[in-house]
Amino acid sequence: MEKFRLTEQDRATLQFKVTTKLRELILKGEFKMGERLMQEEWAHKLGVSRMPLREALRQLEVEGLVRIEPRRGAVVTPVSADDIEEIYQLRALLEGEAVMKSLPFLDEEDIEELESIYEKMIGLKADESDLEQYMNLNARFHQIIREGCPWRRIQGFIETLWKGIPPYTPSLLINHLEESHNEHRLMVEYIKRKDEEKLKEVTVKHILRTKENLIKMIEKR
Image (cartoon, rainbow, N blue to C red):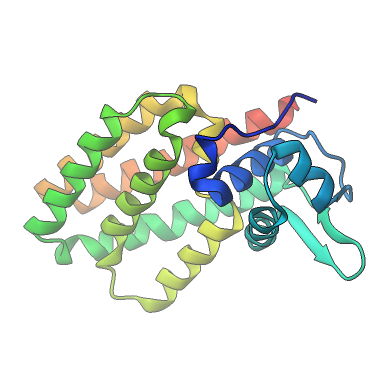
């Protein structure tokens, strides 16, 4: 296993960095099912205190990648290809519907923000140095296009699914960012045209393509 120590620059966003690193290792299959993540050991490996590590483990528990047990601590529960299939199929179904319901309520201010986010995303470097900013922008982009949907329950289901598999998984699919950029551009275009069917179509395609790439990654591990 590679060396994991974080640099001083990394420590500006410690919890994010620790969470991202551990998530990546779990999804890449570096741990066995049921393996314990010892806080003291991993704090030393990453060169951080135990506080950001504890916070990272809590986040990974929300995502279903670890289970925190009494007297045992954090135990790895990696997702399977079936988990990815289930979560992303449900996301495609629900978000496709949500963006259609949301579209009539998106105004010029929303479109301007989407265009601004898109320009920022394509201006970032396709490497880990800009990863946190990209992921935050990506999450906000998807939030905007669905937040006009008046159905509260569907919004709640989607939020749960985003937590069920991390919204930061594109960090493991960095070679596919150009495709994501193209799909985001089309989403903005269809919103401008008020084309509900096309917006739904590209949103579903975007989610299912990510699903297929994640499954390929997991099956290689």
